[in-house]
Image (cartoon, rainbow, N blue to C red):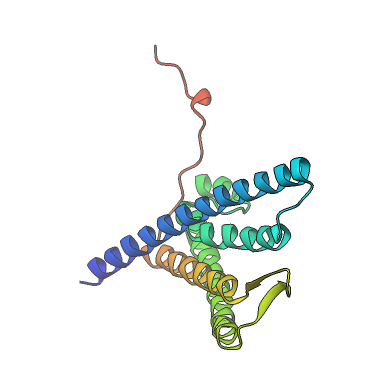
Length: 183
């Protein structure tokens, strides 16, 4: 029973992470379009696109926190696993336990960030605080705070599921050019 619940929760978290990653990719594409329009408008018409600076700032935060959970899901979060990989060959149980501890601490930190950011997002929603230059270009703060909170909450859940499921060791990245040729 517990195993099926964890499996279903893991599938749902993975699906959400993949969907958020796709949304982050769409933000990257939109940012490319906006920056190109701004460059063309500056060069050809001597009229820069209003709010490009604010949009770029918001977009970077959106991209990072929309894609964070999927990066955690596929074990590609930037960290040094060299020591754990070396230790895995001689002491696999110790390496697996250390990996679980690291994932548990990561889950706690992500949960704390989400815990702090959700009330801020709700506060920004009610106060309607804006970022930018009034009269020129403004954006509301609450979507940024909500994306940070949601991305961290989903990342915390995925880290916690990794701890519970005792995922032993992520697959090492191997480029095809390093594989042995077939005889």
